[in-house]
Length: 426
Image 1 (cartoon, rainbow, N blue to C red):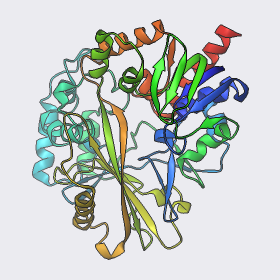
Image 2 (cartoon, helix red, strand yellow):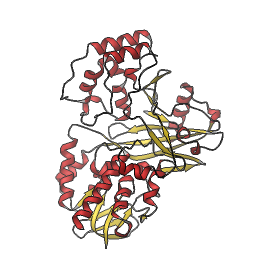
Image 3 (cartoon, rainbow, N blue to C red):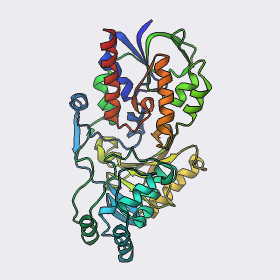
């Protein structure tokens, strides 16, 4: 019997295993490789991550691990694409490149906005209060439909924290009259491995762990303390730690009451299609990453893996990856082939590249991408968490805690669980 069985080989599961120690735990990962959303893969000598990933960890515990691989350091300079314009981010502070009449509407709307308050009924109300109706409708509300796959009025606001910048009137006016604006992005330094993609940050931990791959869970019997896998194998445990998404965990857990099942079904997350493109020429884009506001272009954002590290593409080549989000309430009704054609057409229209530049296009589905913060999320999450605690299952990571955790926060989630368990059972 394994002392600690960890389900999920993403950053949270690997960090948990690392701090528990190889001799006392085994990690079971459903995919062919470990890493989860922090994973990386090769396509024709190109390296791609599972979406846009750069580390901006500040905690010493995370940096002690993530700083071990050789890495580059960047000052983040994200951009926005809007109707043929490349606008500095955040867009509300950088209106300079907009047509004059549109700038006037933005400024006028900002001046007419309601006073800020402590409690908001929904995300739309928060946006209107921070930016004014015109800016909110044109930019963050539109982006919300692409990224969160729903209307801003249906989302709550606790997740925002420092992720959205609220400018002063002086910043709005300066950004409308000059392109020389201050950097107000919430992160001032980002890091990325020299080789191997973002997954290389996990290697100092993973290399000494017992990680079983291709182990998809089909049943958890909490009464008899065993986990059964798709390949027919079974493992018994003393302590079970899971980073499996809560709705999926409840599906495989034996004898779950209907109240818990119903609560888990109301926990909604987006899925993601990554469209990875390899080019036969260098410097296709000079933008490390950018957000896309045009409604007729499906991706919410894109980034250039070769700018994160030149080793992500062969010599003389470059690469891009686009992210398209879906949810149960917003599906992309398009085949992968048609989606590739859409990306090709979009790149031409955005003047990024033409068809002769393209070596390949690859589409990959990522089942769980981001937690969607509907108003009843906390009530339903608590119902599920309390049940898991009752049956003795520990939960970690973005999809175990069911929260907006970045990779460093997921790392700390796994680490803290290891410390908690070692303290309890020492």
